[in-house]
Length: 309
Image (cartoon, rainbow, N blue to C red; front, side, top):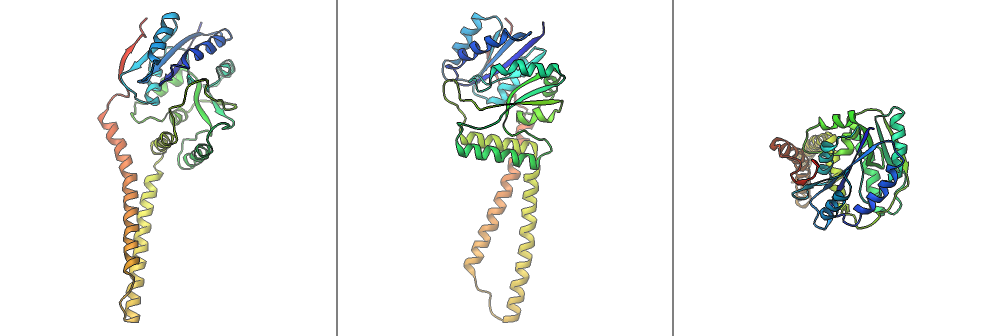
């Protein structure tokens, strides 16, 4: 019997782990696969690790990896992918916003010849209006400036063949944006839509600011357009300043009067200074990414695990 590895990142999810396992047990009976669970405790400060250890003691196919601190979801995903031994691999959120009952349909699409079967939300019911607005516009922006196309509403929840997982593991970059990497590797992909779901329990650790920073990671990791914008702004500022100097020179030559406008001059200086800082910020962000890559620090540090049981 072939094996399905289920990667489940967890951060302060003590209330949802057992609910997730119970729902997944219902799906196990519907699929001709051996299930392997890999829970990644991403430095939780609650009782998540204790709950995972208890679950692992009760079921042989439940494994866990516990980080030394919180390294973020991207680190948890790559740790799970490296630990997975299944012929097929899926990534799921433990809060049940990723419907487990879709797995049989996703597996059938894999059998039909697809390499990746992803999921996407058909709506954003229950999500704050501002967050929905920025999320939709993020996909419009990233798809207009990047060669890698990302599906609006796409989730990390997807079923992949072993070949796809091996291809993703060949990407050794430290700065990771999984939604982009899943698209970048290519392969035949099919998306299943479903209505948005609320968390089964607990509270999300994602807020507007963390999602905003995450979206910036995606834009910087998969597009050089911000650098091109900085270059364009610099060139445009130079051209405008040249015409301005010619205007003031000719004006003074014709009227024989000093050019008034010290306040406007200060405003222009402040404006140009702001543009320079803006462009430097963009360049600095890319340099920072290079700095992190050159250091070659690991994506995560494992404090304990039970993968050898």
